Length: 122
Image 1 (tube, rainbow, N blue to C red):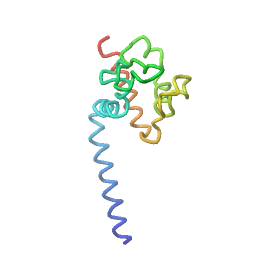
Image 2: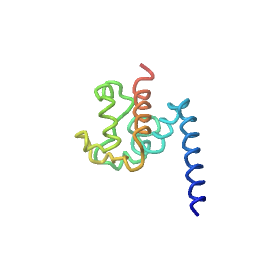
Image 3: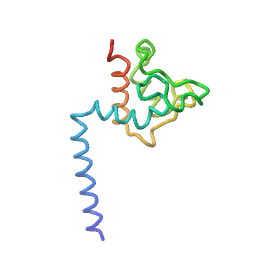
């Protein structure tokens, strides 16, 4: 029984290392994929704040393609908003906290993707 648990732990560790190696080279792709999974419902596939949930929200989601608006936000503020929710940065309480779903490394990848969204055409 202990041997089976050890084998599972070793396999899990190897898979985690493999996943890390895969995403080390494709960090931008990983950030985009995480954004697609966690953010597009409200912020939209294009990041313009026009996701499928936007019409039903009393406060409209942030347009992540707005360079001026996004440039006014520090990476730390964006990280904090994603991790702890909008209320943590004095923004909408409708922005959920994702700290139970995302680790700090994944949140940093989303922040990096947000910077790409807001500035890629400028």
